Length: 309
Image 1 (cartoon, rainbow, N blue to C red):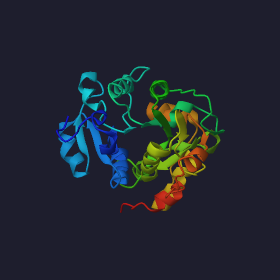
Image 2 (cartoon, helix red, strand yellow):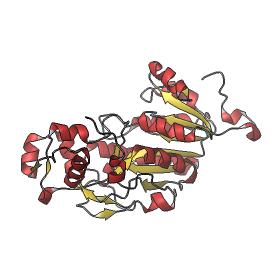
Image 3 (cartoon, rainbow, N blue to C red):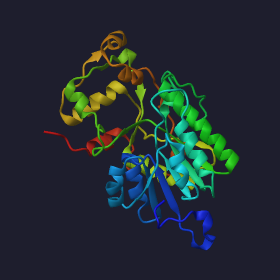
Image 4 (cartoon, helix red, strand yellow):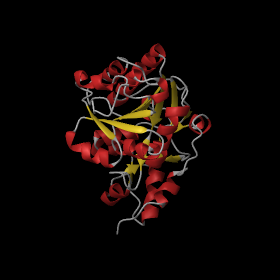
């Protein structure tokens, strides 16, 4: 543990300062850290020693640890008042041992007041284009979604038993101009096809900056053991989304293909996104977290993006 960090449980309450630990401090985590900058002391768990300079330059205190090696997480006990957990599950299996290891480490000493988890909208599975809110029964169709459901259950059980306020943010497609792979432009330039209108699916989106702000708000405003859909107000099918982006970028619209042909020609990962259709209701995001979206729809967000020559 860095020498300037004392477990919070060892300090009198009047000397305790809010400390937010970010687990999985990638693009969204760094954006959240910038939102938090003037409020709290910020820490980041990292498994990569080479990232320490980058994290320090961003104003965070790096804490070395491996979620896949529970013994390295002991220093997390009592270190934070709030935790933002954005680390993904392992790429295989049906459970999320990383989340379980994190909760075990956190409960060794004084517990955080709140934990916010970045889950995925994939936990809902295919909803055949229906409008859904957070009460929708979970029915993931992919192994990725199943692992996220396992993580959500672990956190709900832990939070309820330990008295920690857990918020589960269900996140769809993330985009932003300064995020790797964060715009549809490269795909449009490759000419990757989309589904024919008769087979097309509804898709949901959130700008990375709005997502980061939602994460921070949930640390303070999220209700106990509560799920929240974190998506903007866009109501578009996937093909229409790419058509709109193509028009904004002044690029050819992508070709349309029937699902049968797509299944023969497109990668399995891409097909998995084309196999689920849902329209996510974001009422809780706007009424409980009281987030005012800076980019209320993808047209507003994409219209602000730089276009490559």
